[in-house]
Length: 258
Image 1 (cartoon, rainbow, N blue to C red):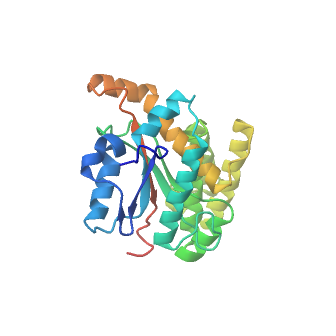
Image 2 (cartoon, rainbow, N blue to C red):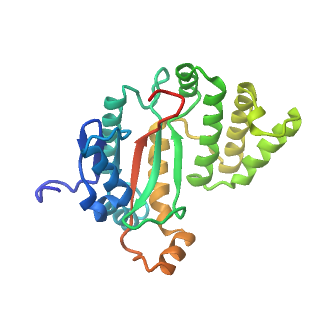
Image 3 (cartoon, rainbow, N blue to C red):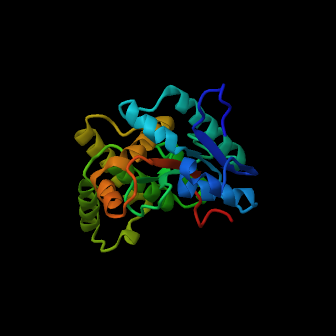
């Protein structure tokens, strides 16, 4: 797939009439990435995105679990592809693009590696999501879910801290279910979640969407070698050196269009 004289390529796009790969590329793109590219190639309406190849997983570990600058440039081009197809802007306060970041090895390992959803939300883009969806409660609920998931997966904080804060908030209001929480309740909880991050992580929650994305990509590659994934591979005779790909794809919400 690459010219021997050109720098190694790691990002392969799909969706919006583009399919840089197919089912024959599972070793390079992982099962999920290869299948997404294949579906895009036959014209199915796949939400646009890109796959970072398994080759980068090996390089990530070879280089001390860091992402090279050249990859960040490729990722930026991948985001530009998604923006072009969706008409949304990554970090755009008025019409924000949100993405999911998921693992995808050549051999499926369900539930073993990490995922981040709703990435791209911050104090500005949540307002844009509320306006576009015409549902302020949905937007702020999505934001608190993102902070909780990102803090667990990427920042390594105990998710129980956030669950406890939610339960206390419900008790204070006399609620039994999350569905009783209003937009104002979720907004207040978001502020509380950010305080938890600042206290436990000694840094504020990242608001720059590119920093969020780079952190999530590194975390998903990092989850290839967590204990549960290593045990799963050992039990299922899956080689440890095949690595995972990372799939970045536009979020689609059931109440926002077709």
